[in-house]
Structures are given as C-alpha cells and as structure tokens.
Length: 289
Image (cartoon, one colour):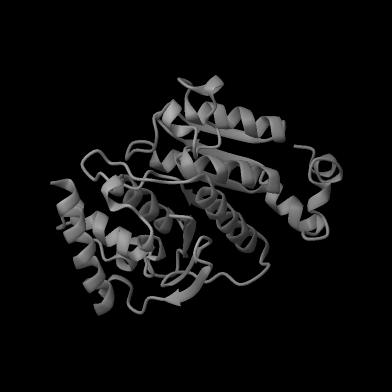
C-alpha cells in the first residue's frame, strides 16, 4: 500500500482534522465489520472514506428491493448480488489499494478466529434479532483484546456503545445469560441499547413483527450510526478524544432533538434496567403471539 500517495491524493482533505501520522495509522489499521446491510454497509463506506485501509467483511445475504430504503449498497442494479461482495467493490472504488478479506458465509463458530485475525476493532452490523452470533463475536473479540463497537439505528436516531476488552463485557452490560430464552435475550439487548427509548414516542408498534423478525428503519438513522462508529474508530486508533466504554452510552434522536450521554451503573444488574427489560419482554411476547 502506497501510504504517501493515498495521503497526498484520495485522503488529502482529511488532513487538518487528522494529521498525516494519524491518517497513516488509519490506512494501516484493520477493522472487522460483521454485516454489510443497513448499518454495516454505511459503516464500511464511511470508514473507507475516512481512510481505514484494511477490512474483514462478513455477510451471508444478498440484496433485495426491500433493502433499498436504508441499505447503502442496495440498488436495483445490485439486487440479487451478495452484500459483502458489493460493498467490497464499492470500497475498492474509493481506495483501490484497500486490503479486503470476505467471509461470504457470515460469521460462525468455525470461522470467528479467522474473522478476527489481525483485527484492531470489531464493528457490529449484525441484524438485531441474531443475538447468539452477536454474543459470539463480542465475547471472542474481548478474549482477543479487541475493541468492539455497536450503534443501533432507532427511529430517527441512534445509540452508541463501545466495549473495551478491559471493561464490562457484552453479557454483563446487557444482562444476558445462557439460561435465558431467545426473547429474554432480545429484550435485554433492546433495553441496554436504548436506556432512553425516545423513538417509542412516535413508533407505530403495529409495524414491529417479532415473529417475522422485522421492524421499521430509515436511512438517516443508519447514517447517524455510521458517523458515531467512525468517530469512535478514530478515537481508538489515534488517541484523539476520549473513549467512554460501557456502561457509558450515547443516545441521539434527531426527530425529537434529543441527546443524552448516560451511564448504566452495574449494566444489566441495574434495578431500573431490569424493570425496563421486563416491560420490553412483555411487549415482545405480545408481538410474537
């Protein structure tokens, strides 16, 4: 990779907000993105334009017309094509020197170590309902000393949670354990993602179908989530700014003009979080039936 040429040309307008040394750091860094759909796709493109130079991309799905409203690799011309392959092409169109390894079967227990090999940061773009594979990638990243970031698009907003390998674990923050059933785990995940669920003020809950694993989502929320993730990647890799791992969280709702930086004391053990989880679980059980 010709770092000097990339800094002088493709990424020259980053300089001034990043130093040449910081830009070189990004170009040499490898980031793993699990999922190349709604948030995963825009995470990848934002990081590529920021100058991250190496990617592992995992996704087992293909684009469909229903993805066009919010997935940034979805066009009529890409329907039927593999998501990870499309995003890899788009990244190479941004930076022809980018180093990309694809995992077209998605992430699994069999390939998780290969997926995280040489990676400095894991970025979560996994579909909301896939809780077990998400637990696998976060817990394995932690065991390997890798930072992990998730930013959920919720309504016209997004949340941000950063997991330091030395800090609170994924399971501890969300209050998830092996003895819970799938809906209990999803309810705990939802409660931890949005300690302040602003989007519920205007969400039509009749459009959420837990049984079919789908719910409403809009492109601006995915774009905001990508901006939050990319900024944290810069902080972690370059030391600019302050990284606030969980139980810290950041939540923004652009429709309501709300922003809150909070701290969930004790993570999933927090009594208030347990109450919230109870009501989320009740709503999910009603929706699934």
